[in-house]
Image (cartoon, rainbow, N blue to C red):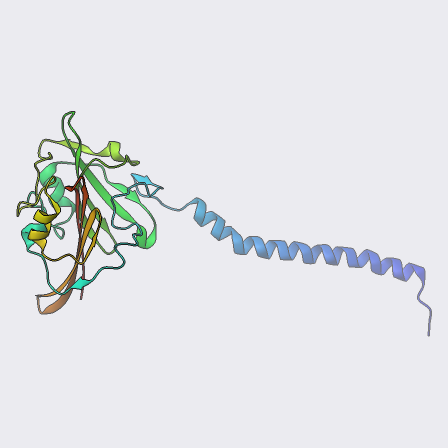
Length: 239
């Protein structure tokens, strides 16, 4: 066998280094090509005007709530007047709320299934504040009436309204300050009951233009010192 000369080994070594460098460059280029769109999309992700990247809106139905996950579904629907305020209905949409209470800034939160848009109104004057908030998400439309509670990011966007006060009620007469007994008399037997909270889960069907829709409505009533301080309704509809 012909012996390999030292110069041959040296030449091969010089050749192998550029080849290894080329392979490394190719791998880095491939990784960059794969990762760059992800990095770019994160940096260019679109957030609507009024977006807040936080979940301080403690009153929202979209937040995970273990108590609300274990309620008995009642196969009936509440009376329409029980779940509307100032003629505002859950299915009416944001335009109906603005037409009644005036223009308000839209606050957006969350991503995907947790995304939600909110407009908020608050009682005028220096007395204990009462809030009325309308919220929409991919699945639900919700209406909240409450007094007190923790502050949250974005509460400064709430618009003062003379129509909002401690005496504001649903169109059937349910209002803040009522006892649990009075509230349950209007809605009937609760789906779940806790020390300071009464929950309802309703389900029913409606036919519209020949199509059958399943309506789900949730009601959340919370009490402090045995008086109603928070009342919320949420509605979803599928066919």
